Structures are given as C-alpha cells and as structure tokens.
Length: 166
Image (cartoon, rainbow, N blue to C red):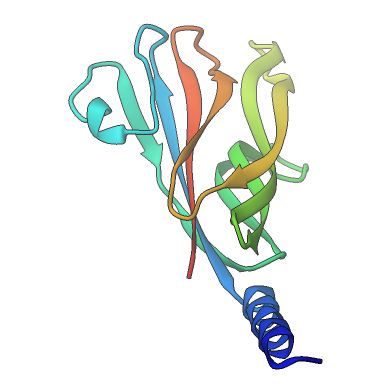
C-alpha cells in the first residue's frame, strides 16, 4: 500500500471512529402560532409578533445513533386507571454523518377532548396525532416541522429543531 493511500485510509478510519462515539445535541423549540402568522426558522422575526407563543425549548444530548426522547406532558389521572400523558412527545434518533446529521423522528401529540358524558365525567376521550419524519440537517442549522393544528383551530403547532455535533 502506498503512503498516500495508507494515510487516507488511516484518516478515514479515525473519522469513522470519532463519528461513531460522538454526541449530538438536540434542541426542540415547540411553538404555537395563529394561522395568519408566517413561522420560519428565523425565530428573531417572531420575537414581538402577536399570536406566537414559545411553549417550551427542551434540550437533550444523545450518542450518535441512539434514540432520545423529549417529553412535554402532564399526567391525566382517573382513579383506578393508569395515568395518561397529555401533551407532546418527540422521539428522535440522530446520527452524525460527514455531511451533517441524519435523523429519524416521531412526534406524538395526545390531547384530552372531554368526557363521553360530561355530567358524570364518564369515559375520557383522547385524540392522538403521530407524525413520523426523517431527513438530514446541517450542523446547527434549524429546520421547521409543521406539527399540525392544536385543539383550538385558531392555533398551529411547529417544532423548531436544531441539532449540532458536540
């Protein structure tokens, strides 16, 4: 093996080893906005706009190729039954790649809709929306995912997702 080829092979093996053990930081900003507001990845444009709320901005770190979970929920408890998480859950597997970060994710929204008989509070009714998505992103460059309509038709939800190599 010539010297140049050997040096290239060693450099590639070193890079692969670094990527295999590297971490990825994931920030998921959950946003609600009225339908008349244009939401973009540039959140500074939304700072003072009426009808836009940043619900939460959790951050996690995962090993490259491992699954992480972000959960912004509260428990709905009915006596004698298992609690049900109401809110937003995001499961994401992010992996470093030479061109950026690849990801496979699943957004889950569970909402309480009321009771089948509101006077007796019998049989709670829930609506669950699951949105799978995947793709690739540049390091530290945000992407925007339309997460659908909130329980109130006057609001839409978005996930402002940023991933970076750490």
